[in-house]
Amino acid sequence: MQKYIALLRGINVGGHKKIKMVDLKSMFEKLKFSNVTTYIQSGNVVFESEIADQHIIAETIKKGIKDTFDFDVPVLVLSADVLLSIYHANPFFTQLENEELDEKKMLFTFLDSLPDRSRIHEISAASHEKEKIEIRDEVIYFYAGNGYGKTKLSNNFFEKKLNCSATTRNLKTVVKLLELSNLL
Image (tube, rainbow, N blue to C red; front, side):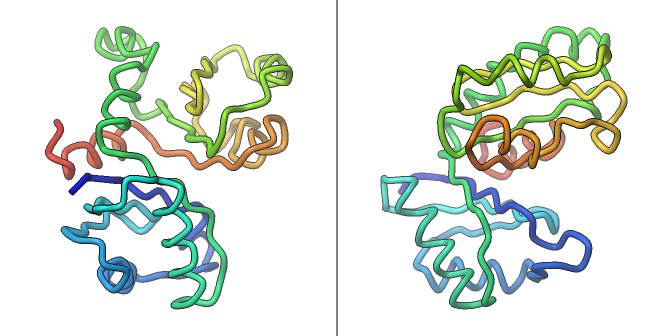
């Protein structure tokens, strides 16, 4: 059994696409995933599966959500080991440890595919001077110096500029998902 994390985008935001976590957990169990744990209302699920292909798992979850709750939700699935590698690869880690950066403003934007490299410069050009950004493969490490609520660099912005789906989690959530996966 492999441990995975599912990141659902856009549930329980502004009263739209409401899913109770107990119902989400039950749906995952009906899909034959095991040791299912949810974390906060924004759609974070730690679980185990014998299926090795993350894309098949994501499609299974998307279909389960459509069948159970009657709406579509983008789903990104990562192995717990990959999430741990992403966490450790954070280019701003030293600055966070030295308290040069506020950990509450550290974000990870997960992409469902490799971004269009020819468009990355547009993201850097749109960032504010208090923002730090680095794109590595399918992850955007993003420090929102003025806070995430004040930045132009939202999921919608990244999706439009990079031509892929995106979902963002803060550092606290990433750490908690790794703890729930027994990796931290």
